[in-house]
Length: 527
Image (cartoon, rainbow, N blue to C red; front, side):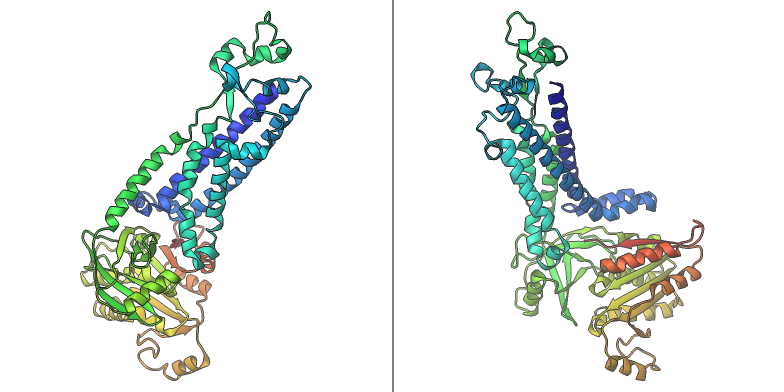
């Protein structure tokens, strides 16, 4: 009996951990993936807290992945533990040595005490495969394990980037996963001695005299067992209710009419949509989910808002990055009337909202990754026009890295307007921007060199000359640290992971050990 108790409670412990982390993942997924608005509200609530307390919220995707990896690990432990248990069950059922395990395994599955069984293998001829596919616990375990495998394998970066639809639909297997999790324990395989039996035949007193259980003169009788009532629903009831409420709210919000006021096709096949929606309110750097029912009823894709909060419309820029975006651009290129209907859900918060909380801000965009900073730069233009004295930021460094010259045309007018506005206000040093072209040939360089003495850049028409190649980040950070020896510098990136690693290391290298001197804080957009 003692060995069984140890094995039994080991299994229970694994089950509790496994259930707990599954619920933990579901709640976290609710707060981050399916309900990014809750993430936004949480950041707003914690707005009065220190930067250190708010910053972990910006790593919600990383946290989501880590918890998922932990669940995969503990799922494997859970399955292996059951395999060991069923091996012991099988040996105990087939044993004929009259041992305690054999006696407990032969407790009746029939008669008036048929529910007091302990061993789920009801006869020596029953196989593990049979028990797996004929019991509630076994069948639901297989289903939710397959669902978990599909969700994890389809979430790898390659699938997300090249086959987003596969990732999107497969990730919604979490619905089947949660349903299976709720009913997984209904079969009662995890069993314990009944309360009445514990009082009459306590294992500490009766385990050593199991040979005498059939003796009518002995005070110990056969123990009675019962399946534990499934409790997983208690763990996930609250998040399921919140999730359902949030889905209804998002459905209502997404069904509100969106009016497309302007459609602009930029170079490099980039589509700009300017829209209006009743009650829409945004902050800089936020993003929305966009759906086009004529392409897909179920697919919602995130796009950073490129408009400023001060403008009377909101806008997004769309670049071809898959089948859905390609179909969207083609639909608007045809310029048929009426225009395709667009549904918008959001906006949702990001790290870029904190940009005006820093004395010095460094904005780094790679290609279409410039979009959150377009919103910030537009907002700055409005703040300068209206002499906003609440603006804490004293200096902005803006780096835009592109592969082709046509991409610079997306926001040329904005940068040109900022140049003129700052000259008129005597704030030429407020914005320091650099444009880097990584995809160039000798003809482009030669043409730029011949026209270097002109007042404006030959490629962009701006006063700031275009640089060729990639920034030398250590030199850039060293210059900023020298210029602002006692400032808190916020570094914001919307770009590839490789660049993020380099910039994070630069922030660490160039931050002073003295907290009173220059400190660099790295922030990366995550979708």
